[in-house]
Length: 198
Image (cartoon, rainbow, N blue to C red; front, side):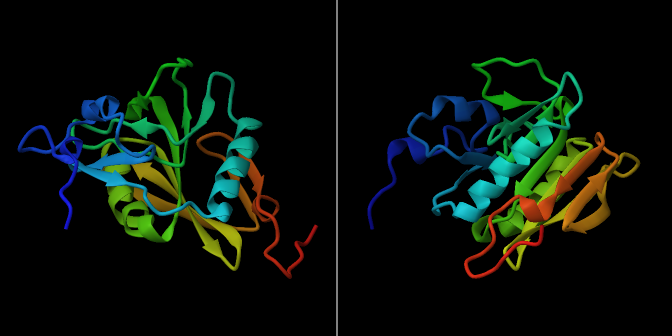
């Protein structure tokens, strides 16, 4: 068994801190920090996942209110030991080309597209952590027969937890965090041998 490279050992007994991610050029591109532990996205990304994230970004960019932006694969500093990297965010932060992270108060919506290796983190761990950080809206996108299904959540500020706000197939229509209307069936190409309904 080979030893780990020196950079993979945490610099302190408490593990890694959020600011450490900016000083780890050796880490893989999509590295998250969850409870002081580095999480590497080492599995190859499926084409379906990448296409869906890109198409969601395009769809949301036409609908976000003035002063908001849609970003992808940027980390959110939830606290000193947690800095996850969601697939997509909507933020009202001013554009800064050198920025590497956001704070929860700058984010109105987080979207995670579930992959097999991230399923538990997306459905359970991040659901709790994003809510505790005060992010108002969270969407978890699952694949069902090659099509996206969006599970939406709204923050119940009385208990700092998300309440389910609907499961959407075919079309996603929501009044919050801003008026959203997305034809989900049109987001990804039809699976091989199938046709999409127009």
